[in-house]
Length: 349
Image 1 (cartoon, rainbow, N blue to C red):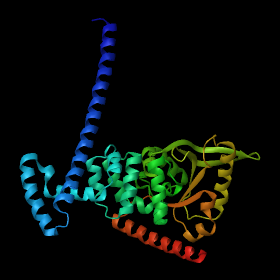
Image 2 (cartoon, rainbow, N blue to C red; image 1 turned 90 degrees about the vertical axis):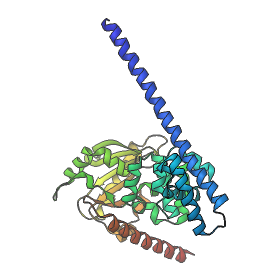
Image 3 (cartoon, rainbow, N blue to C red; image 1 turned 135 degrees about the vertical axis):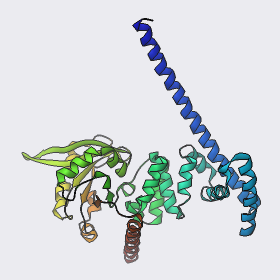
Image 4 (cartoon, rainbow, N blue to C red; image 1 turned 135 degrees about the horizontal axis):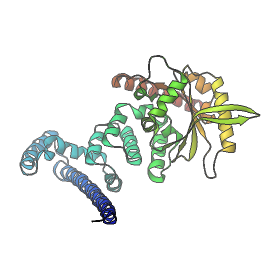
């Protein structure tokens, strides 16, 4: 066989392998969709035809007996615990049209993680974000563990605002800044030493760019580091510049090692106005900025009306914080924010 024949065989082999792998992926997706739909139907049938208006003890007894028979015939996938998951599955995802859409994007393993979230609004957040950003099961688990919902600005808004923003993302594929902004950002993967400079922080982010983007959101695209802009003959440098595809806007990330200071607002506002005039493309939204600080004052941020400037100030954490402490901290801050929101609403009324 000559070299030309070898090349033809290798090319043919690559094409056939690609066809086989694509077919296997399609089959796996089809099997997953059918399996989750089966589990949903089992939950639906038992709920509506067996447990309807029946006492809880009756339900436990009949499911226990049913499970024993199914496990013998079909395996551990029909254990008592899994059948109870199917009942909760139908309870949490009753809307057949919505469920059908989700079942094409999420596996049963995704749903198992989501079923552990009892709060309806929080579960809706993780469900839509997971389906929209195509998180793996591992990523979903990490997002829940790192209290992403509580860290996202949307959690401190009214229930109706949360619902509206999630519907906008789910139906129109448009992300609001409330769903994008977080506080704090968890950057423990940067592996920084006890003492580090802004340049060290910047270098660490770029070295771990993939994980950094995952923390910020899948639609983040890196554009530039230390982007130079010139105003009246003087050079200024933007630390990091990104583009968010769903929001269709440029995003500045400015890094500060100390506590947020009022003068940072003026600095970043200047960058935003320059980008808006000279860099914003046709059809894009106004650029926004995130100032990442070691710490911040919520009162100062509120008094400076940073939200009206398109600027978000957030703390970053470079050390691991236990999950229970992290979540309690965020729950307390959410409650405080919602009380302030209610007080302002009462004053306005």
